[in-house]
Length: 60
Image (cartoon, rainbow, N blue to C red; front, side, top):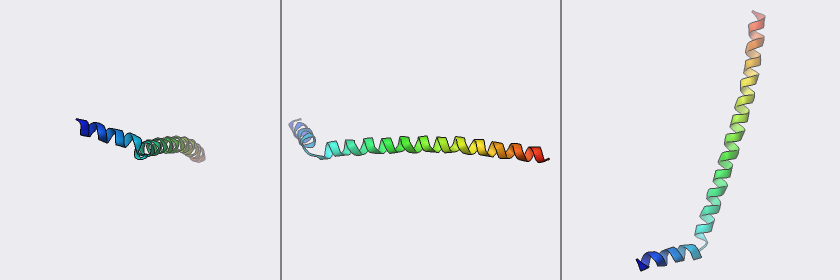
């Protein structure tokens, strides 16, 4: 058990733990930004194609 505690203490003292957490937070924020952008783009495209469909239906 003392080996495990030594490893945990070493991990906490080293820079690897905080760096990994920072990267995880950064990746999560980038993923959220991508999801929001894709949803906004999808809504915009849906509206545009709906307008095109309405215009085409009016021609016939």
